[in-house]
Image (cartoon, rainbow, N blue to C red; front, side, top):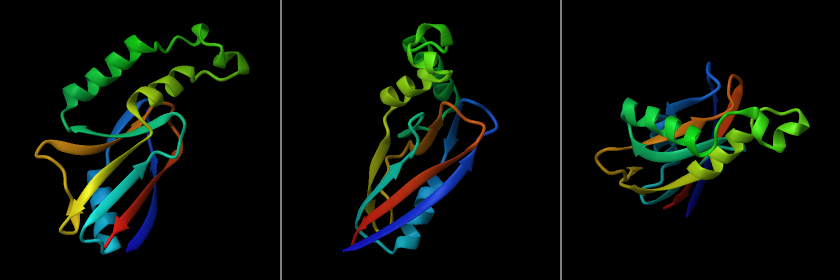
Length: 138
């Protein structure tokens, strides 16, 4: 069994952004030499998420609108913000969207459905953030 780890760094110009990272994950899988296995993709931040969904701009806008309804960005309604932070909503969004994703690997490639793509959801950005990719298999 092989285990391969790669960390990539992303930087968003916006506080909230969704980055399409499928090709970076696919590249790490190929570098690993794993033919059959799984890949874990982890946001490595408590205010960010990694998830799999459709790569359609309207859907990404819908995610943001839906998240804002569930946990508004209003900094005056959260106890966490009493510490001097202004990102309580981002912690909640991350909990809703998930910390990480696991994807099957078949024939040295991601085993994704026809419309599936891998995304990094940034909810408190404008600085460097790490994404960990760990490939396990044979």
